[in-house]
Length: 374
Image (cartoon, rainbow, N blue to C red; front, side):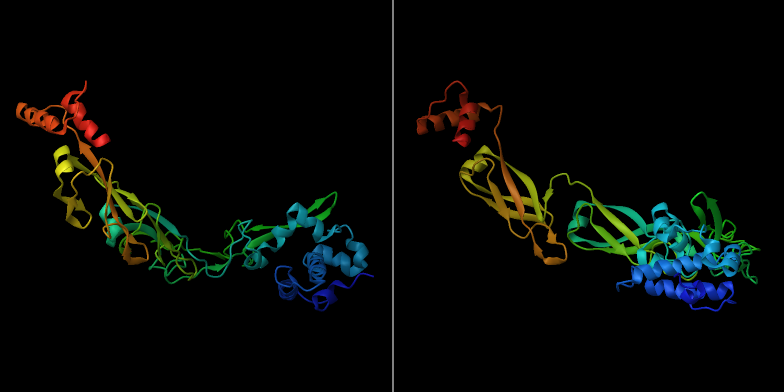
């Protein structure tokens, strides 16, 4: 035997719509499957939904009061379990349980504080700026609460009034008859766009929106060791929230310009070191450019092409631990001359005689190349 719908909601038969709504919200929150995991809570939840569906519609409620369950057997008789497959379940209870289920599907707006949107800014850095970090000034454009109306959207000295279409609910209900029964749909109020309020005299500064687009400058700190795609979060610098809601955040995405001489591999810096054949044969000392400035490097005698030399701790600081740094790796590239002065050729030919090497078809130039291939 079906239970009495008034008993299910715990209200008297003379309860008005506000009492029904309060009772329904209290019970539905208590037994919603996302909140209550006890056995039988889902069936109880559906029972509560069915009772409210019938009693919240005056015409259907009148038939129920007169004829009982038999009088409303066609009004949603398939139940809310079937309606969930048709989208009706989500439509009707979206506004009540968006906090539990994460839903925002039909766009029904909350009347309370609303957090502002997050913003994104792409910022280019020079190679050295990404390595050592520092302070950067940026310019953003975001929504700020209108100071003229304090965010209400109404002309100073006036106040928004309750929407006459939805009576402040922010949504309207519409019953639809189908061959399967009568279904109730809930949608955003077209008059107030879901806010539940109407502004009769709009603020002249913001045009009734309660917000203004403002440009401002910010100084942000770029940590040492950032790389392409690093994201920085600047709290509270997104768009302002509505109805005293918190502001969103600003997300700064970093992109690093290429360097003419240096390349980056994680926390290591790579570069090429060109030396002449004589410097490679005899050895020498060279001043090498690094991100820290010139560093003197000893090139050992007989250094071979493509030798990789390591300058420790002249690389990139580790992000989040700038005390730890990578290395600067130098790849030795040998410059073999394609043309020789007569005196150079003469000296090299004497060197060949001393070494007893055969020059072969490549001549002196080929001989020099052979020195560093073997």
